[in-house]
Image (cartoon, rainbow, N blue to C red; front, side):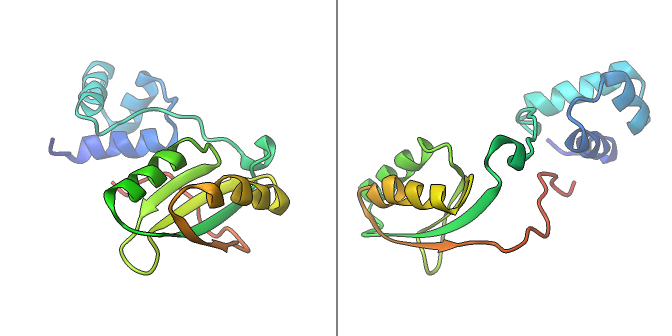
Length: 152
């Protein structure tokens, strides 16, 4: 699917507020409601819009500490990597998991209420995954920028 300028305006508006009513969205992007709704449906069907979510305030749900964890595995064979991936998918504290090229095998973004809770999570879950050789924890001192909006 090729995105035109109107599609991009729709995507920018919905990234800012996924709860926009079609009437308001149409007004913002310069369309009448019917063609606007048709475009949104096409963007959804094409998978450009994957889903709609609510963004929560981490401090209000006891998840205000973000930790980055670099992970080294004992090997990069398919069994070890797949076992690690499947284990990580089961841990709701892990918000992101990226297979890396370079020094470490994976980078994780983990949330926890505090440092002690993270330490318990690391010892009780991450370090116990079969095939994990080494973990390095990185604790950010200040959040400078966090967005879910893609530049379209």
